[in-house]
Image (cartoon, rainbow, N blue to C red; front, side, top):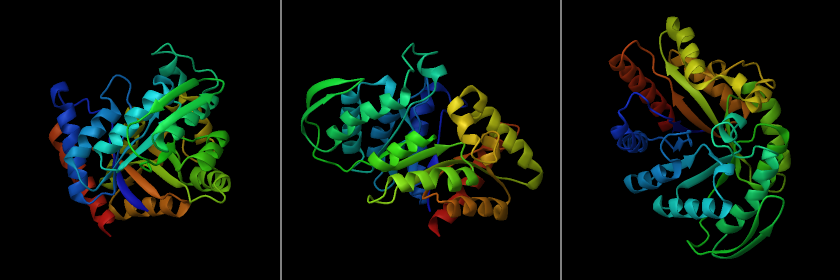
Length: 315
């Protein structure tokens, strides 16, 4: 199992420092020996692909990926152009994570249609995969797009395409057409009994699909575990707002994201991460949850957790 880092919006940083801070986080992850660095498209925050393109120039080894970009917010030709450009900036180390987001974002915030989101992703994938295959004309007609265009950004780059595949149909598409899945709010049982069997069966005859699992992690005292789990669920959870996550949670034992967390001392964190590995996770995307009552304490907590994860990545 490859060990990487996942970050999100950092509201504790002043706005003027957020981009520079993200770039510093990515460079730090590379220096610490992590295999990958994942950044989501957070509503109203930094643009993920733009930020990763800049990070590509500040790093030389680490894989850089979106986790994830919603397909409804960008025309698939424009999405492919941006992905190809980002891959060039990253020196071929870019992974394109795509998803369908949630109705409260796509419809509620942006006023875009959330009808048949899986069908829309599949239709957009027709265009994106054709564009990523190399320069030349693209002609696609399906339920959602009518494209007759030419993309001339780069030669075929081999950009991995990963889907936020939570349900059976998305897992089938990810196995048949993409390079794997990116998960959030999936515990070990959901991964072992729901995700891995479906995506593996769909990928029959193709390379083994990647299973990238976003997992909150906190290295802390046993007495702090409950608070760390509650903090993760409060900041990163609220699954009841997103039916896609509710259905995924039903396949496992977790009720919210805090229940998927690796928290506690070194032995407890290691045991939980090994359980994810044994469930079939190929890539861990660790989202560090710092504990503490003030910024200095949380910063120290973040560094302790990062250093421990880096030691695991090295071994």
